[in-house]
Structure formats: C-alpha cells, structure tokens
Length: 183
Image (tube, rainbow, N blue to C red):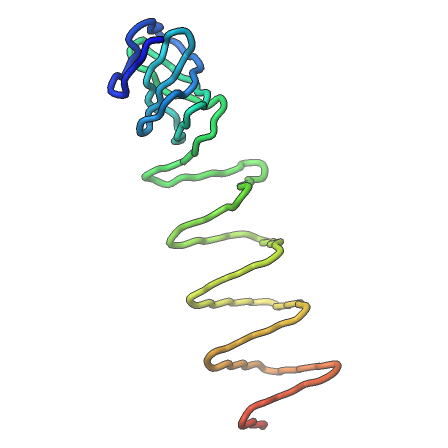
C-alpha cells in the first residue's frame, strides 16, 4: 500500500484521473483525513462540505478527486461531530411542516439574546429549574396557576397590589409578623 505523509496532498501512485469514491479514515490531521480507498491507494483529503464534519478514524467518507487532490464531499458512516457555522445569518425553516430539533443527551441554546414569537407555547417537562438575574412578566389577560403546593421565599420585600384580593383556605390561614397593619 502506498503511504502518504500528512504534508503530502496526494497519493504517490495509482491516482485516478477524476471521480468520486468511498474511503475509510485511517488518520486525521487538523480538518484533513487520510483516506484508504482500498488496493494501494491512500490520500489526504480536504473538507469540501457545506457543513463542517470532524472525521474520526474508522469513518467511511465519500471523496471526489480531480486526479491531483481529494476533497471530502460526504459522510457514508461516521462518528464525528457536525457543525454548521456562518459569519452571516443562518435560517433553518420548514415551509410546510414541523421543524424538530433533538438530542439524546441534551439540546442547548447559547446566545446574548433569545426571542421566541409564537401564537401558542406548550411546555411539558418533569422538572423546570430557572436561575434569573431579574424577571419581568406581563400578562394582559388572565393568569392561572395550578399547583400541588406552592412555596415562595423572598429575601427582601414582598409587595402585592390589586383592585380586589380574595384568599380562601379550607382549613387554616395564618398571618405571622412582629407587626401586622390592617386597614
């Protein structure tokens, strides 16, 4: 088998003129991959896909060649990471269906500002944990909260103002404070 060093962009012998063929990744150097095409043909290939794929040894990739250089143009079977990166705006949209994002372990969003525009938002979760610097919520219609129990701990001042307030307890209501003002 013809060996190719990482500095060498092409195989030493048996180079096809042009074409597309699958190859197995033997070695990775930066974003390049040393592909074994079978027989005695091995070559370093540069990435040429719209999305960034980081190959790992053992992956099966699709490569194109002009006879002098090889380019990775697809992934047949792979275990590497995929990244979609752009200096400009990126839009992912379904024109007539549902857009789904999923991850076996997690889905993470990281940004300076996140805006969500929707007619309806539905959230289903076993638990929700939020840590916020400050929180402002404006509800123009009715707000309804149903809970098995509700605990609130306010470290500073708690203030509530309303046109009317009504509290109903089926068993007990307790107001405890060193000073209680009514009226």
